[in-house]
Length: 238
Image 1 (tube, rainbow, N blue to C red):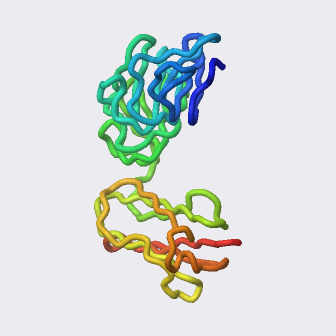
Image 2: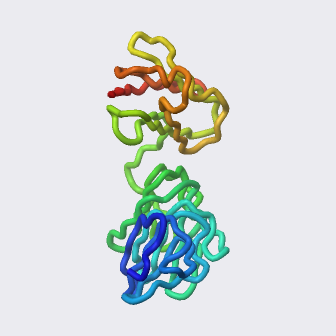
Image 3: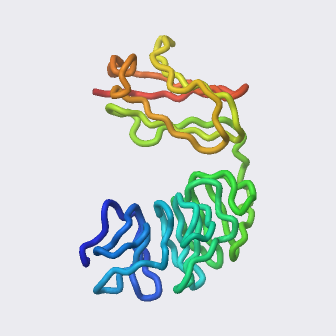
């Protein structure tokens, strides 16, 4: 397709008769295109100044193209993680979100947004939000995320590297350690104060030290933040 893009496309969407591609690239078919580009069937072109960082999702909604990702501006217009293309120029999409947007879906007149955020349009909204127009609307019966959560990102059992993710509702002093089945400390991954929001940490043999010597078996990741504690089971295989 006209030379394509490089290095990665993460979303495709049909809009106004053309194919829109978004992802991690700064050119398409040799044409400068910042993280989003249009294919008209024969050539690539930019959507004005594009975005200033990665695009994860695209959705046609109410005559516009909605773009989600981990950017802060669209064609130099402040647009935290969400932006709107009307066919000729970029606009902010409300107040956006305070973290990455990874999924967009239209349902009826509403637009649902998913990702790694705690606020949407300046309102508390953990990981998922609903927009009516450019204003977020409450999703009924959605519990607030107050408890500390720790999860595995990717395979578990795992080989080589375990990726852990956790969400802090507010800034806190955080300690994240790895223990074997007997409770013996194997590794200390974090011991510092972190801001609120989503965080990711990798535990890998490539880090050296005790992690490099850890054999296959059952391990436990222990996360402490303020007065809260949580444990997550990990299984390492060869």
